[in-house]
Amino acid sequence: MVERTAAMWRELGVIIQLQIELDRLKDGDASRYRVELIRHVEGLHVSPDGAVARVGEGYVLDVHHAAHPATRSNATNHLSIGFTGHYDAMRERFGEHIALGAAGESLIVERPGRTQLADLGEELLIELPGEPPLRIERPAVMRPCAPFSRFCLDEGEPPPERLKATLQFLDGGIRGFKGMPAGNGVVIAGARLHARTA
Image (tube, rainbow, N blue to C red; front, side, top):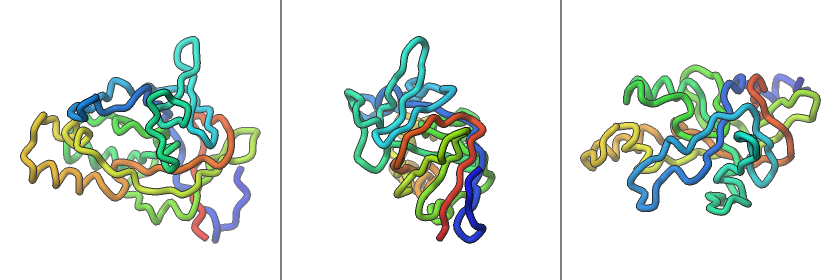
């Protein structure tokens, strides 16, 4: 249980899905979004360098981990968070092919409706069973890319105006949020996410 006062911490929801990206989801020429490179996992071993997960008989680095051979780390994005309410909005707009986790976030949190960056506060805390909570610093919006937008539209070459409208719709956190872990811990489904608001 996170010790907090009502003025400082607010629960956002329960983590219901964890996953890693085995490699960059945009292919070499950035034309195709490779959703097949997302793997659902039972737990994430999180450190300031990023996330590691057990896949099969071994452990695999998420592509945003600083040590991944093809790392997508930019010192702001070692962990990412999505919300179920955003997937509801994407499916309503684009269709049922937008499966939960298709945007590639590390953690999916059960929370209805729209979650804004302001709802995430100054930092996040993830409750860990039997361990101190894991802090996630500098939450920020993950900007959508053209390949994911085309994937949502299910069109190879949508008209520029439709692609632009899709990018605008996915921005502001619908595509997800990112942050930097400030400690170490193993995150599992059922853990609760909290936001520091003051």
